Length: 383
Ligand code: CMC
Image (tube, rainbow, N blue to C red):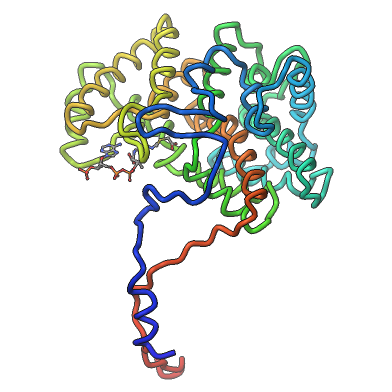
C-alpha cells in the first residue's frame, strides 16, 4: 500500500483523548452518576453505607444479588478460609526487598497466586466465582502479611468469629479492632468496592477480554491502581498534609501550589461534575474520629484545603482525600493506603472480570497514526 493510501485510512479517525466519556462496554455492576451519585447493582451507596457489612457488597458484586442470612454465613466462612495464604506466597513476601513499595509486592504476589490456583485453568463460571471469592480474601491477607513481615511480626490466624473486614484490620495490626474501628473499616471497604470503568477496572477488563485468567487481570489492575492519578493519590494526600506543619500554613501552601499550576492530590474527578458522593461519608467518618488529636488536626487542615481549592478551581475532593485521614486514624501507615484501596476494590475487579468474560468481546481500540511514511531504510553498516 502506498504512503498516500495509508494516510487516507487514519486521517478520518477521531481521537477521543483519554477516552473521556467513551462507553467501552455495558455494565450492570455500578453506575457512576456525574451528578454525584454512585449505585452498586442499582442500590444507591447512601442507602448501603453503615447498614451493610463489606462481605454483603462483595457478594452483591459477584452474585448480582444481596445475600440472605444463610448465603452470607457461607460466603463469610469461605472468605475466612481463603485468608490462609499458600506457604510459598508467605515465604515470597518475607523475601521481598525491604525498600520496595508494598504495592509492588502485592502486584507480584497476586500474579504468583495464579501458580497455586487449586482449579488450574478451569475458566468456567462456577470456577471463576470460587476464584473471585478466594481473591477477595487473599488480597487483604497478602497486604496484612506484607506489613507484619516488614515490622518483623507474625500475622495472627484469621478468626472464625470475625468477618473479612474485621479480620483484615486484626491481621494487619495484630490486635482486634474495637466496635468503632470495625464500623469504619466496613464503611471504608464498602465505599471503595466498585466504581464503574475506572482505570484499574478497565485495565482488568482489557486483560480479561483476551480470555486471559483472573490473576493476570487483577495484576494489571493493581499496577494501574498504583499510579498517583488513581489509587496512589491517597498516599500523596498524606504527604501533603504532613508537609503542612501547622493549620495556619495551609493558605500559603495551597495558594502557592495553585499559583505554580500544581495539582492538589485528592481533588478533581473525571466523571463527577459535583462532589464525589463518597466524600461526604468519608468526611463524616473522619469527623467521628476527631476525638484523636492527630485526626482533628488533619481534619482541620482538610476543611481549609477544601475551601481554598473550591474557591480557586471550583473542584471538589474525591474519595482519596478523606480516605487518607480515615486510614491514618485506623493506624495504617501511608504506604499501605493504596494496598487498603486494592483490598476493597478487588471485589469490583473480579466482578468486572466475570462480566467481561460473559460479554465475550476483545477490547481493542484503534489509534490515529500521526507518524511518518516512506522513510528510506538505511542498513546498519551505513547508519
Ligand atoms: N488540582 C488542581 N487542579 C486540578 C486538579 C487537582 N487535583 N484536578 C483537576 N484540576 C484542574 C485541571 O488542571 C484542569 O484545569 P484547567 O481546565 O484550568 O486546565 C481542570 O481541573 C480539569 O482537569 P482535568 O485534568 O481535565 O481532569 P481529568 O479528568 O483529566 O483528571 C484526575 C482527573 C482525577 C486525574 C485529576 O483531577 C487529578 O489529577 N487529580 C489529582 C489526583 C487524584 O486525586 N486522583 C484520584 C482520582 S479519584 C479516585 C481514584 O480514581 O482513585
